[in-house]
Length: 112
Image (cartoon, rainbow, N blue to C red):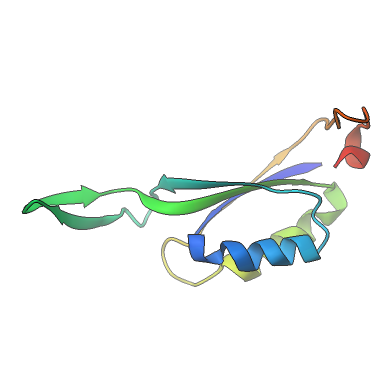
C-alpha cells in the first residue's frame, strides 16, 4: 500500500475529488492549509504598510491506495491539478506497512 499526499491549488479540489471517487478511491482526507514553496506569496498593504504575505491557501489531500493502483491514481491526480504555472503543488508518496479497519478488524488492502 502507498500513501499519496498531494498539496495543490484550492480551485482544483472539486474536479480532482470527483475523478478520484469515480476511479474507485476508497477514501480521502482533505485539509484546507496555507503554505509556500517557489511561489513565495505576494505583497499586500495593511494600513499603509507593505506586508509580505508569504503563505498561500492550498489544499492537502491524503489517500492510501493498493500498490497495483498507484500509477493510475498518480496520473489522474497530475491530469486534474496541472495548470503549468508556479504553485501547482507537490505529490508525496510513501509506503504504508499496515492498515486496520477498526470496526471489522480487517487488515491490509481489504481494510482500505
